[in-house]
Image (cartoon, rainbow, N blue to C red; front, side):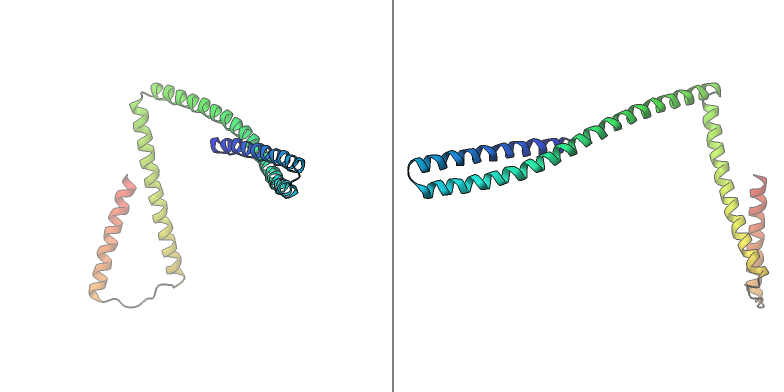
Length: 175
């Protein structure tokens, strides 16, 4: 916002400077004509036209910058109102949380929240495991897994893995 305001002020100064130089060129052209020096008057008028053109372009840019800055100021005002409302809500929520924590014994509320979060994480893991198991059962029922005979070593490894999974499921079910 500050840069935009600075740019607006710079455009205003530059436009004013070009207007001043255009007026100066017109005065020099008058003096050149009064002195009978038409070539000097032409050069002065050419400079005047250049400065007039530059001033018009800068004034258009200034008008756009001014409009843009007015929009920025209005937006800033709205944002400041929203920020104040948000701070009020945050203060109200903080006060409510503090009262709730005092009512629940403070540390007990924090511990209960931690316990609830741990339980939700466990539930998510159980849900993922159930999803994987469902996919495996669907694949088995569809005949997606080949019924190839297993070697003795593979069969023992599978039996060991199956037993480990059963014990994990049994421990998770008790939790």
